[in-house]
Length: 147
Image 1 (cartoon, rainbow, N blue to C red):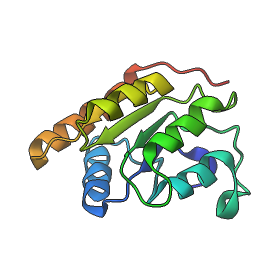
Image 2 (cartoon, one colour):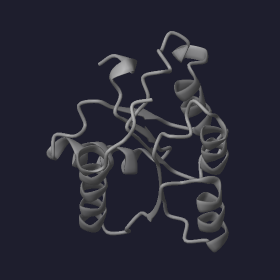
Image 3 (cartoon, one colour):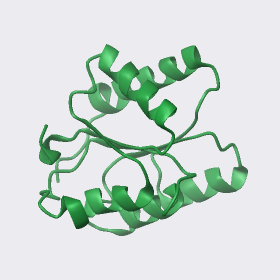
Image 4 (cartoon, rainbow, N blue to C red):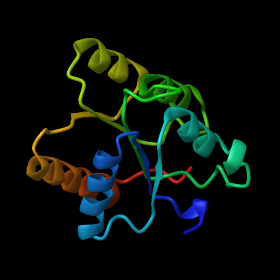
């Protein structure tokens, strides 16, 4: 898969959560154009075409970014802020997927322009259901601009 074909950018440092997300989306045929990065710094490089992603055509935006908050290097709140502060990327839907139920994180995320905030279910069957529903909504049902 080319970097320019990415529909879902998964930003997740927990490999178990990442693998379960990828597996779940694969089961419903939505993972063909999924790209996984392991921290916020790599996510920013991917989104803005820097570092190892400098060859990526940044006008080819993902349909949705699934973003964890608590990550090494650059946290998800800072990634969200940079995405929504940039005129070229602010229209990309961002879904926070995190274990944080902290009111401060929820408030800050919505204040910065997050499109959805989802607390990861603890039980794997609930996690699978939530990821399936998110994938179907953001890739099939929701209409986005291709600006």
